[in-house]
Length: 65
Image (tube, rainbow, N blue to C red; front, side, top):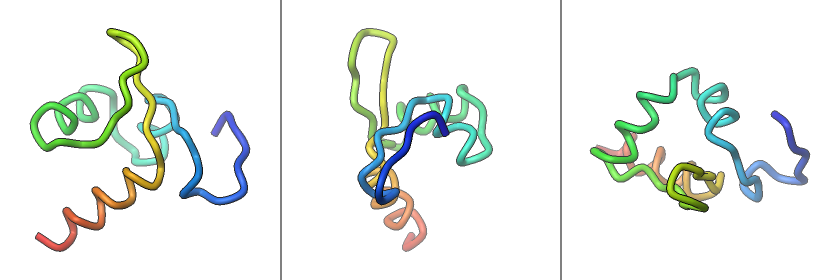
């Protein structure tokens, strides 16, 4: 990861970092965002970041289904 943080839950992740962390490629991440409501923060038309606490909450919610 390219940034340092005290707790993972406080991290702001780039698409590149999140893809590496989850072991998926960008197309899969794009599909999750569009089709499954994966949480992202849009900075510009093409740039997004991901808040680790929202990503963790979304993953936990998916695991309960």
